[in-house]
Image (cartoon, rainbow, N blue to C red):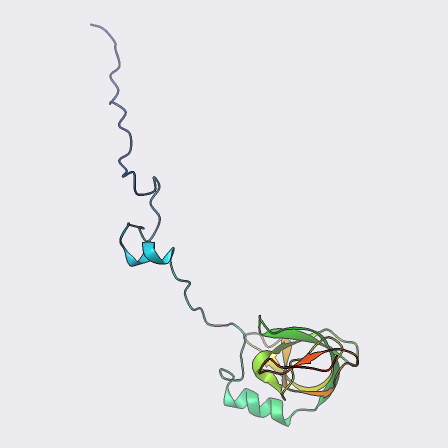
Length: 153
């Protein structure tokens, strides 16, 4: 009796020359709508930050009844829709969402602003600026209106 071990034959994985070797989810097949679009569309995930639209009435009422603070725009990205304000008292920078800016100009670094504060859920430990009004535009800086027109230089 010989002790030859018999192992099963090695079979290469099946794949079509038109499809990738490693399948992905959803499976991209030639001719499918996913294949033609070039990928899977990103899912619309809800923003974790409350905007003017998603803020509760009670949070809006509390913020409106609160004191008005002064600060300077540290930075604002129109494409990302948010920025930060440096408070006049020198405390930690305050987040500001595009939906909370009132007026016709997009804030730029150095603009003086007034704002009220609203806590950010779920822990309500940090705050965001609401009812933001540009009180003094930064001198010698071009400003853009929300419609895209550049004013000043």
